[in-house]
Structure formats: structure tokens, C-alpha cells
Amino acid sequence: MDISGGIVTGLAGRYATALFGLARDQKQIDTVSQSLMKLRAALRDSADFATLTTSPLIGREQGMKAILAAADTLGVDPLTRNFLGVLARARRLAILDTVIRDFNALAAHARGETTAEVTSAHPLDDDQVAALKAKLTASLGRDVSVDLRVDPSILGGLIVRVGSRMTDSSIRTKLDNLALAMKG
Image: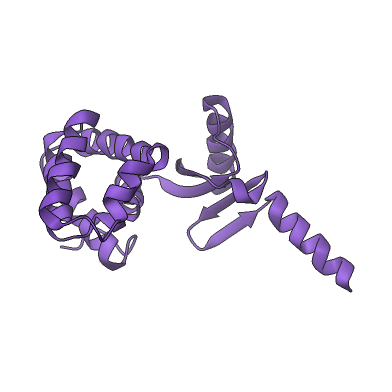
């Protein structure tokens, strides 16, 4: 039985689907989600951790020992820790961020939510996220979970993707459009 329902695709989607299936069977979806959020924060906040997951210079055994030690330090649950070991053994740690995104999409779908990928120039505070969720829920007519990303290159505003629909209100895009219009 395909639990992904076509929500996720590719290599990262297959890994996310496998992790989601295990988490669902063990009734650990929320626990795994929390662990994955810790890992995403580490990828975002620690250059050393990001390098550990992407560097081809780190050998399989070294990478596995390092990622499991990092998992212990971050306090991830045993299922997620074992999953990290599988990724390290298969030399697939570079897709960890995409696996996390795909797992979140699967978890949101299981809860009956739609996932919106939101990119902002600066981190959004809790009130801003709550207001954004409320507007998206009202607009879409169903519950929405948000997958937040920070990209300073957009300068300001937001880029919101829900499925194949995208709304780009970033300052970068507005400046690019203005420059194009001025060229005539």
C-alpha cells in the first residue's frame, strides 16, 4: 500500500515515506516530527552539522559515528536516531533536509492538513506564524501546516507555495520586476 499518496516523490520521498510508515506503525509520528525539527534547526544553525551531512570527504564510518553522536546530543528519539544511521550507512545524509520536508508533508496529510511552504527573509515569530496560518486556512478552507524557511536573499516579504500554486510577494521579485519594466 502506497502511504505517500503521491505527495512526495524521488529518493528523499521514498526515505520519508519509509520513516513515516515506521512512525505511524509505532504511533510515534509526533515524536519523530519533533526530533526532525531539532535536526532541521541543527542544519540551519550549525555549519559543522550541515557540513557533516553534505561533505563527501567524511567517510561512511566516520559519518555514521558523528551523526549518531549528534543525534544523542540533540536528544532525538530512538526511531529517528536509527533512521539517521540508515541514511549515513547509505551515504544519503545530504538529502536529510528534503527528507524532513517530505516527512512533514506526509504527517500534515495524515492529519488532514495542507502544507504551505513559506519562505521569509527573516525568521517569523509565533504571532506572525499564527496569523499566516489563520489567513491560509481561511483562504484554502482547510487546516494548513506551514513549513518555514529563511532566505535572506529575498530581502523582505514572503514566498508561499501550496501545492503547485505560488504567491511571491518578496521584495527581491518586486525589484526585479521594476528593473525589467524600466528597461522598457
